[in-house]
Length: 114
Length: 114
Image 1 (cartoon, rainbow over the protein chains, first blue to last red):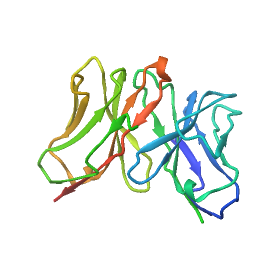
Image 2 (cartoon, rainbow over the protein chains, first blue to last red):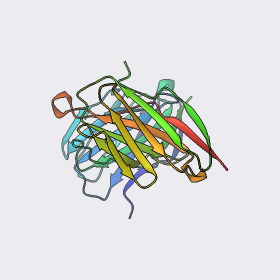
Image 3 (tube, chains in turn brown, orange):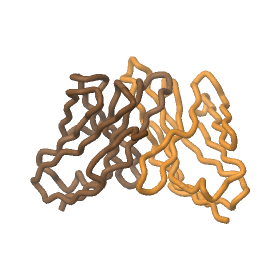
């Protein structure tokens, strides 16, 4: 019963490097999300997808890119890492986000940019 | 501009007593409110929700109260247990005509002492 799985768990990047955070879900959810959590700031939505082939910007999309080629996978790409992208990243999925549909989160990826 | 606010970053309660976590919001059009619980090094997990047309929802030791006129909701945990020690996030769902996104508060760290 995997749910939402994201990798890697921890990563240190140098400024200017690029990397991809992987996310996969096995619940056949149409909706997938990427959030970042900064201390004292709650969870901010970076990008989301309402189905395969469809992605859209959230509250804080700058510096990130996503793709959704399958229902299961929703990778998050950092092209030119900056110290401001040091954060904890959470991938999540749901059947939908209206009417209080529950969002299921992965365990998080801790990213440090130095 | 923080649409969902949790003004208390931390709360300490004695085991067996009541824990009250508060949340304020600014958008009167939010149509669903949710509480998520997060343990260290884990992703948030859904705890309880309430529709905007209700003023109370109860699930075991957890009760959420909604005061729409004051744009305020609270989560009551009674009796509190040491295992309840975690960060609690309040969240609200935008109506679909405003994007339908889930907006999170900053979180309140609850510590229940034996």
